[in-house]
Image 1 (cartoon, rainbow, N blue to C red):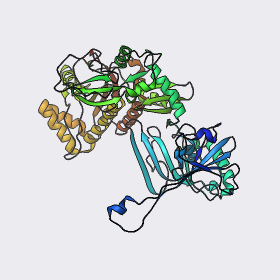
Image 2 (cartoon, helix red, strand yellow; image 1 turned 60 degrees about the horizontal axis):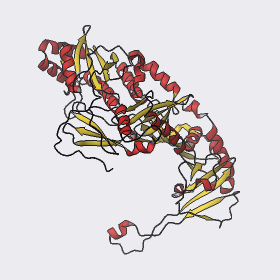
Image 3 (cartoon, rainbow, N blue to C red; image 1 turned 90 degrees about the vertical axis):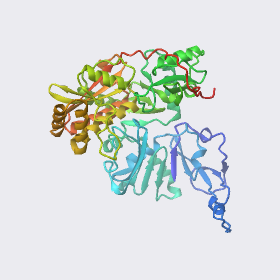
Image 4 (cartoon, one colour; image 1 turned 180 degrees about the vertical axis):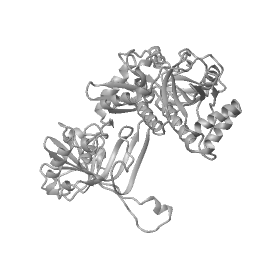
Length: 540
C-alpha cells in the first residue's frame, strides 16, 4: 500500500479534489476507528491488443481505486490503492513523508535502488543493484545530487512493522501488519517521520532537497516575482540551455507584444519590457513570469528557441535559518547553509585575480583568437584531441606559457549553470585524455605544430607526457564583484565546479579559476537588419 500523511489540521473534506469522481462508502465492517473510505470503480473494457490481434476471446479488464482515511494522533493518514492518490489535492499532504520515514527505517547496508536528480544538468536517473548494498554502491553523491526516492529492506527492529520500504512523497510499504494493527503501524510511522536519526546514517542526503510542497512553492514564487522590480535582489535572467557563443544570436521578449531585439540576456531588459506594457511592482505576479517568453534569435533574427521567463530565472533567497532556497531551471531547492559554506571554503582557494585580457569583442570565438594574439599564445578553439570515433573534446581554448609552464585555458562567456557545467566538464575531460591517451597527446602535438612551430610542439608534448601542465578556468562575466569569488556563480555551478576541481586535483593537475571582466556593451538594442523570414512569435 502507499501511505500519505496529511498536514496537521487538514480534514478529509479539505484534502479532496473538486473533480475527484470518488464516492464514499459506508458498506464495511472494519474495526479501524473512524475509518472513511472513498471508491472509484474502473470501467471494464477490452485491452487494445485484443482488436490489434483480432482475438475472438471475451477479454475485459479494469482497475478499481480507493483511498482510506485513518485518524492517527493529530493527523489524518491516507492509504491509497490503485490510482487512489489522485483523489488528494497536491497541497494537503507532507511531501517529504515517505523519504524521511525510509531514511529512518531502512537498513543502510540493504539498499536496492535510488532515483536521483542532478540539479545542474536536470538529469534524472534510477540506479538499481541486484543485491543488498549501500549508497556508495548506488553512486549517490550527496553534495551534487538530490535524492528523489530510496528503496531497501527495513532494519531488523522494524521487521514487525514493515519488510521493504520505498519513499518519496508517499511511503510505499510491504507490511505484515493486519488491518486491526493499522493504528499502531501508522503511529510508529509518524514517529519515524518526526525523527532526525537519519542524519547520522545519511548525513549528506539533507544537503540538497527538492521543494515539492505547493504551499511553500507558492510563497517562494511570490518572492521571485517581486524580485523582478527589486534592483538589489540576487536575480539573474539566463538562457536555460547550453548556448554556443560562437554563433551569432540575439534575444527578444514576447507574450504581451514583442520587445526590441537585444544582444544579450539581462533582467533589466525584461523589467523595462514589463513597464512598457503597464506591468509594475504592484500588479506583478508569477503568472506573468509563466506567461511571458524569451526568444532566442539567430543572426538573421529568425527564432531558434524559446523558453518561459519563469524557467529562465536564477534566484536565491534565505529565510535566516540553516537553509537557503535556490531557484533554477523552473524548480525550487532547499540547500543547507553548511553546504554553501563548505563550497566557499573548497572553491575559493583556487580563485585568482584575472590575468587574461578583458572581453571586448563580438563573440567568444573572437575573444579566444584576439586574446591569444595579445598573449602571444596559441588559439585552439574549435579543435579536437579525442580519439577517433569518440565525441569531440577541445584541448583548451587558449594554450599559453606562464612562468615556463604550459597552461590550458578554458573560456566561457556567462554564468548560466548549463554553460558552466559544460566548461568544467571540458576542462576535466581534456586533462584526462591528454594524460592517459597517447593518441590525444599526439593530436595536440600536430595542432600546436600547425599553429606555431615544431620546437613549441615538442615542448608541449614533453610537458604533457611528464604531466607538467596547468589548467585555467576563465569565466567571462559582466559581474563587478570579483571579491565575492565563487559566490558570483549559481549554487549548482559551484557544486559542479568543486567536483571538477577535485577531479583535476586527484590527477595532480594544478588548476586556477578567474572571473574575466566583460567590457562589451551587450545592453543596447541590436542593430536593425532585415530578417530573411519573419521571426516566430508565440500566440498572444
